[in-house]
Amino acid sequence: MASEEVALIPPLLLKPILGGVSSEEFEDICCIALKLLGFKVEHLGYKRKYVDIWDLEIKGMMKPIIIDVKNSESYSLTADERRKLKDYADKKYKEENKPSDMILIALGFDSTNLDHLRELKKELENLGTAWLYVVKYPDLLRLISRYIRGELDDPLDKLKNCSIF
Image (cartoon, rainbow, N blue to C red; front, top):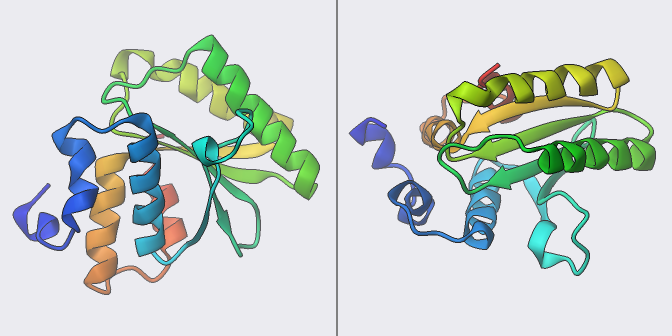
């Protein structure tokens, strides 16, 4: 990230890039980052007693937006994670009776295994349960910098445009 971008980012949000945060801390920090973009975020995930729920949810939008975060610099979709993400999309579809936007945020992704995420994206879209967006955490930070400078008119659209595919 360029120094002028970093200068506008609250230091806490840089902590995951510097390393040493737990999965719970990363979830908390992503929640803060999304709130800084003006979103009304409900913190679910580890804050709830039951495990079968996505981490964060953006409220007050035209359609449901669920967010799952991964504290990994080279996240790779496992069979278990694939099942969970499909279950999340299906559960939210049944609750709202319309497809949701699902945003997966990670510090980074394993470039050799992106095909698994592409397949999941295609499958969810074909089922009509969700639209999957895969976003790198540093790109989320860049949006915050642009938002602070007044350069973003639609943060959600820009967040979706950060998707790696």
